[in-house]
Length: 347
Image (cartoon, rainbow, N blue to C red; front, side, top):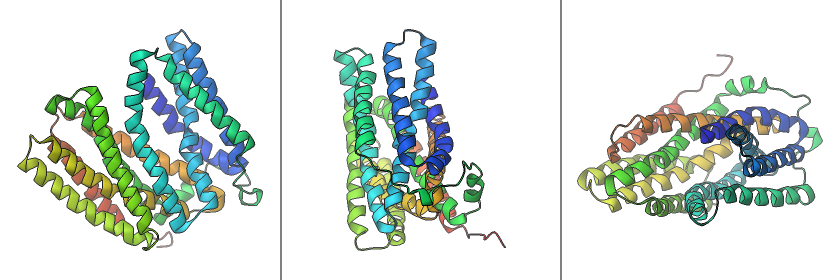
């Protein structure tokens, strides 16, 4: 329940924080969220009531959007085009590695120390970030580019922007494939191959490493190719790697190596698409609405994340071909959305 409430807070807050940041600027909102996140972690450590623990986990999720909405908006404030895509590609490396390392580190901490240690550690890190943001972080959004009012109707304008919405939906589809594996893999690797939680955690690093490598390749390609060309390359690689997934897992259904090889091919393909579409989405919006655009981008990805997790939960029997079907349906959805003819508002 506490994890669900954390994600509930994390899913709701971007749509509020986005317009607020476009109105007040980045630094004030960043300091406020960091302060709230710090208080939430300290409160979780000190609380003895389950109701208080649940409440502060929700607050923790609500304030955690500084790591997604504001980070993307700040980068967009100072970068654009291929430079922006390269920055997203580098950040995506951390997005892949951290979720894979966190269970391993957390597992070792809980083994030797009380569970409160995790939240105490987060509180210390947050305090350090708060000090850095307060004294060293400059305001990246000039007063001339800020929204003149707190405007939540901006989301309706985004829905009427076909180029923006296409990029947003496509990042959501890619995120669904990515999250689908993270949801599917633990149960599958345990039931199919009998791996221990520790072994599963280390195998997640293989998944993260392939995405990390894909983003390194993407960063190098951005110096030589247009963003759209790299996306097309990633699209072809995704189609080929999906076919390879079925071929390898049908030919060697009992092979862990075949499964992980096919996963790494798919994951590396995703790296050539995800960061580039994030950059295109934020490029197709006004400077006064960047944080709101980032909020809608993140919330859409969370919706697709929920869909993929729900589909995985429906699988009564963990079989590698089930995840392959999710990848197939997601790839088809990707192609349909990408090549769906844009309808202009005046048409």
